Length: 415
Image (tube, one colour):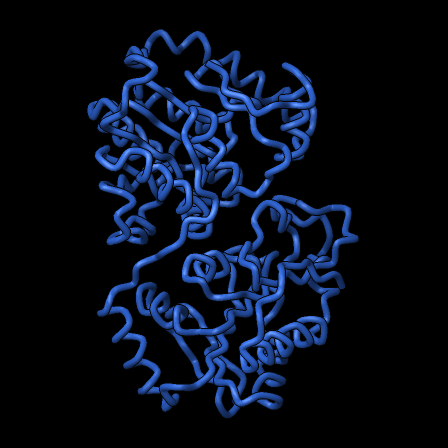
């Protein structure tokens, strides 16, 4: 079954347009994927998938595949919330990166986390990704054998990646729902054609549900932290000498990918101006073990916190200033407005989506998106964003918060 939106083009042209729009895939890379398809197709009879149940049968066991990074898991939350609403009695399992297996605990969205170190999601180096001697391949094979034994009824992936489609086939799920335009459509039972008008990756996930005839709520809300987390945040703030009624502005200068880091010294300049021109307290977030330190300013506090305390403390902020990073997406789940500095990635694909969020970007750089492999000696798309551009927006947002004015509509700020 091929589930479609109403495309402007038909057949192969529509799929080629999707590859160009959603992935910026070059003809050379497409030829490589086609060669991979020819390689694996003869092997499929050796590992048959389960036969499908009736098309209208409600699934009792559902597998969702999203094994990448923190921001990716945050992006998939609206999908999981809609999936749970559609099938409240089904058992939903999430194949996830081992470091993130506990992220969604207590949210009622996932019944089981399947931690799997997928080799190509562990490293940036191509050799390390596909090193045939890596123990991660053994772990992946064992996990897939276990998953096949659970006999999933449905399996989803929103990755638009032939490798994910192969994982869905190997899972043995009787109904496999994903995007086939980037390769591996023959591995799926439901190859969904994407909606070109909705390129954000959250919408890409949600469109899978629409593709199989399910209703979708595009702005599901709510992320539960619990009383213990709230008390933890209050204890931390008291220990820092921060008044209970203080206006908290978070600054998170980190990002897992180096080409997405605007720079500690630039974020420090933002902190200096916030402290100088407002009465806000700044929380300078970083991970434990990070060598970075906040600028030595009154009302600028270091916040080196483990993941759960970080979430609870972030949830008490009125604004987060950050890179294009996992914390940006977490702030969105918590309803915390962000000012996000974007470099090599497309905000239309991965940007914040709240009505009070702002993106600071230099749109004139033709090389975006570069898949975080900068072709220059440094990411000039970030380096040419001046602190004053970000400071102007941050101070305006702080004034809005202090006046409790009506929220503005989302805009993209251009340098």
